[in-house]
Length: 138
Image (cartoon, rainbow, N blue to C red):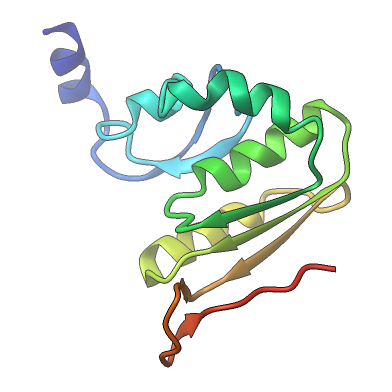
């Protein structure tokens, strides 16, 4: 009941909002607060939080296939920043509205420590126009 009441008073459009807890705390992404409270509070896919908190210290490349609003893309960047670690994040998002939000969020992120590579395409196992089937990272 309290969550429902809270959602009714929150704005119903995307805003740059911070992730408050979990392994992605400190990230800021465009979210609709009525639909994204679990992300804002660091509870989205919470089953992965412990694992992410551990594994991000050992990797320096992250692939986000189906990046959507950038929760994992910019969340990993925030984690790398806290770890004072250089890394690359390669994100794929085929939908124009989500890709535009990723680009506008990216403009606010410094790229000295974490390098971002955004690709507006699908990633799949078939060869069709607009579908990327292989990726090489150097």
